[in-house]
Amino acid sequence: MSLFSLGYGLYAIIGALCFGNVVRGWTSLVALIVFIGGMQLIILGIIGEYIARIYEQVKRRPIYIKRHDRKA
Image 1 (cartoon, rainbow, N blue to C red):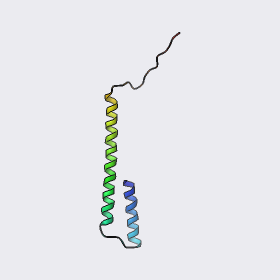
Image 2: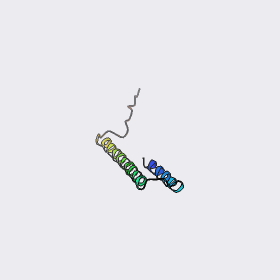
Image 3: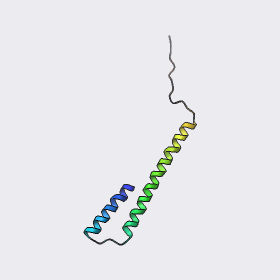
Image 4: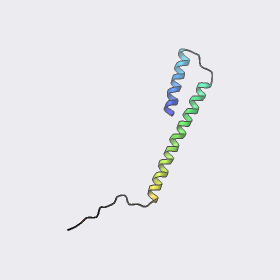
């Protein structure tokens, strides 16, 4: 989403420089809102990964399970 914001910002800047028909303030506002939304989603994903790893450790399962050897 932040990448989309960056792309849209570049598109708007190029459009403003080449054609000059951009509404004042609207482009920067939209780009800023989309960028902040993308950053929030990234941070939410990091927090989710952190909580998932804590949950896995709290279950106290072994890291690996050894298969029983059958001796004849």
